[in-house]
Length: 166
Image (cartoon, rainbow, N blue to C red; front, side, top):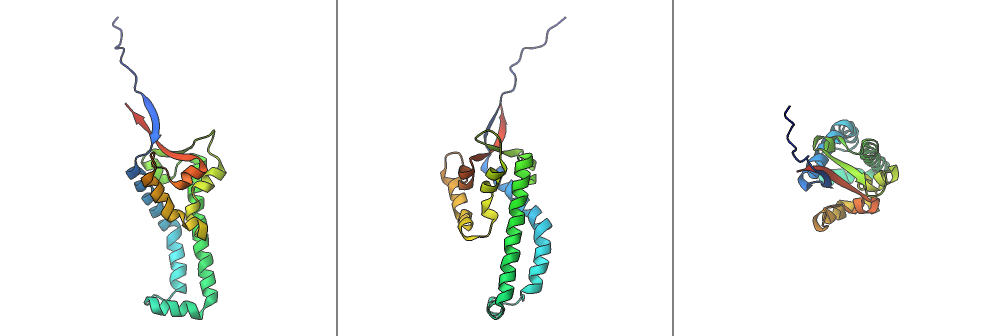
């Protein structure tokens, strides 16, 4: 009887996810959010805001401060739902739908991924002042850190990884 070949096994290791995969996964997640959450909210907002030019919209909001407050609540609620999409999927599955399509996932640099670390990681979706700074800081950290980590990933002690095979 002939024995099989003794070939080396495939070696797999986890490393930082490629930037283009992270960006593409994020765009897919935003498209899903826009379809599921954005479309109903857009219908509500279109009923509230006149669809004229900027000056007439500004005059409308200046004349209706109660509607401005209502719109702020609607936008904050949209941000909360968007944040929950990322937090719940990353906590329960380790990845969002977009990340699943590109075979990348979130993992903790400590023991296990916690709900709190997922919340810290996704603070940028909360449309409240200190968190909106992450819209600028997160991309800058991706560009200037060695392993392309966002500031919110550093704060949450998480990273976005993919499996490499050779």
